Amino acid sequence: MRTLLALTTIAVALSFAPAGAKADDYTLTIKDHTFSPAEIKVPANKRVKLIVVNDDITPEEFESKEMKVEKVVPGKSKAVVRIGPLKPGRYPFVGEFHEDSAKGTVVAE
Image (cartoon, rainbow, N blue to C red; front, side, top):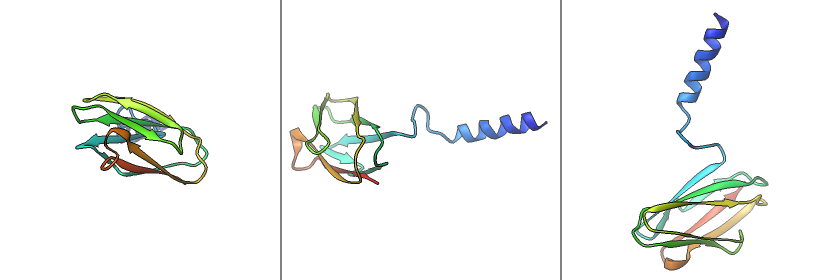
């Protein structure tokens, strides 16, 4: 009986986890040459994965000099960008092809 209860508890807990997402995966979406969310909070001193989804038909380059990363994301596709470990602080990023509108910040806490 205890085993059945434990398995049921585990199954219920797993049903609330997003499919395919891990605790250290964060998703950024590019649409109309802007990032959403514009600010993303990540744990400090830990390497994380950003999944950058480009919903626009044109390519965009995710770039951050402070995080030392550049990645071109073709239109209507997605790319993985690994960042960190980052010290606590704020790290700006831009879409280099549309810097006037595609801006955001990673906050390491």
